[in-house]
Image (cartoon, rainbow over all chains, first blue to last red; front, side, top):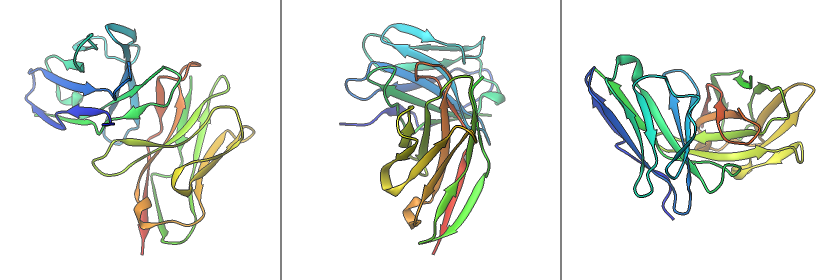
Length: 113
Length: 114
């Protein structure tokens, strides 16, 4: 059983461009979580999604950030008009239910130049 | 608000000696607490979790942690360090009473020397 997959592993964007980060949950998992790790910080919760639904986006910045988890395909975290402060590692996790252990992917390192 | 503080950003031990990684938490209700480990360029792996059952929790790879409510602590220990234990360790508390939305400490980098 493959683990949580994230791609790309490294992403470089210039200021003002868009960044799309993908997360494929483990087989059988319908709950997806996104976290962001800024330099020298712990991971911070961003958003919790189930298939086709955003359950909790209280950790998402109000502007430029959006997330989706369509019926088919991976979950996408989208950052529009990136700024240098968006440079961070973005981790995705999945679980079979919201009460179960979360399995983490290897992360996407976003660098904004 | 629920938060977690890892008291040491770096810990260095010799192979074969005990490991102690310290964590304090604050929570307005009985929390769920976790320790995760991250090896370089790998995803985070759950070491152990406390969810209001036994206060001494045993995890994988010989690690264990003790929940002490009076001290609001959840320190991670291992009797004898192995070289492969060198990694980043995160103490984690749940932000909601439902288990999702984890709140991570800043991490402790464990170095194991021969």
